[in-house]
Amino acid sequence: MSTSARNADTADFHYEQLDQSIGELDLEGDIMVPGAASSVAAAADDLSDPDTLDEPVLATVVRDLRAVGVKFRHVFYPRRNPALLRDWDLWGPLLLCITLAALLRRDGSDDGGGGGDAHFAEVFVVIWLGAVVVTLNSKLIGGAISFLQSVCVLGYCLLPLTIAAVVCQLVLLLGSSESVGLFATRVIVVAAAFAWSTFASTAFVADSQPPRRKVLACYPIFLFYFVVGWLILSHAR
Amino acid sequence: MAASGEWFTSTTSPQNANDSAVVDLENGEDLSDYEVNFGESGSAHQFSQDKQKSQFSQGEPENAQTHFRENVTAFMWQTGKQQAEKAWSLYGNIDILRPYFDVEPFEVRDRLLHSLIPKRPREGPMTTPGELYGPLMVVFSLIALLLYGMKSSGHTVQDGTLMGTAFAVCFGYWLGGGCFAYFIAYLSNTRMSLLQMLSMMGYALFGHCIVTFLGTVLHTDAHLLFYVLWGVLGGLSALKMVVVLVSRTSGGRQRLIVCACVAALHLLFLLYLHFAYHQIVEELEGLGNHPLMPAREAIPSLPEAVNDAHIKSLDVNQD
Image (cartoon, rainbow over all chains, first blue to last red):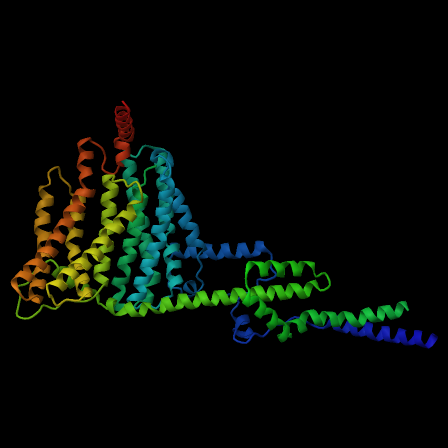
């Protein structure tokens, strides 16, 4: 009995040690997946594949919002930055598109119902379909830009026009739409925003086009922002 | 004995950890069987059964959860892969269209200008480009201009939006009219492909763009300006098409048929664009309103008046 008890004690001691040593082992590391990018490259390029599995949701949201904010800043001050094109996302465009569509939504009461929704849908469809058409065109004339990258750039460059829509809404709140001065203010604001949007997006997109065909790629962009600008200008409560 | 009990737990606990962390992942046989079953009857029923299994198997909850997760991941991966392959094949097909967009800016400019300059027919058929960039851009410009005209004239559409109407009208004319003209040309033995016909008719719409733009910006009370522009610019682009078609058709009667059809289609479309969307501007101007105001605000009682009239007519019918 005593020997067995001693044996059990030594065994217990032995396995406790083992357990401790296992507990102290460093179990962290990267799981090597065949076919995936190597972990060294992933560690070197932290932005491309960050480990976000165990971070709090708040951190994720804040990080994404910060990325959107950085892109917004780049729209106001367009610089040639290939990293910006690489880290594309569609959150900003979605945000801007919904804001714009909600601002340009006409009250449904004077349409006899349903008119406001139709306008919302119209703006929404115009923006996405327009972006798709412009992107397809730039692909077709031989641009070296991926589909969603281009949609991302076109969406982010709606920011000046969205601000113009907010300003126009405020101007409309100030007085009636018949006043010439207020109308002129709206025209100037929208024209400036239109010019800025076109300038910013062509600065990003034109780089990816063959040098002789930049004009061909820029014309649809011009047309797209012109239509959006016209929608903003012609919106009267 | 208590010590031996501890002995067992202490020996088994790392093994258990091993089981759940490593062996499950590498247990290829078990996993593949499970996967096949799931793949064969990957229905919602099976899905719910798996879910129940994973909930009720209290003995090895981690195992079941891992399996469940693996299966869902595999299923999602498979479905996603199929979708992505489909999208990729569609995306790859863009290359088929690329030759039709192989054009330089100065070529587009020259073709736009020459769509308004009819040349004297020389011997042999005139060359016609089979290119779609220019026509597509011209049609999009026309859509933008129509939207401009419609908004300023307050043309309202009940079942649809302005953009949808402009899209349907312009693309309907370009594609539908192009196909119709191709059909007529085919009957009259004209040597012309559908692509060339679409390209020619698309470039001819450049005149429409100018006329629509000028008509919207400089509209006057009389239609004189519009008729002059219609005659000059519309006539020039129609004449250009006629010259091309004549050079590519043999036989007097066939030439007459195909040229009359295409020119009539072209000129009537411009008239339609003007009178369908633009005329209301003048009515509004007569009322002394701003052209940018929607018609509804200018004539607020119109729907009510229509309703009243409708009710009255119903009353009359009932009487």
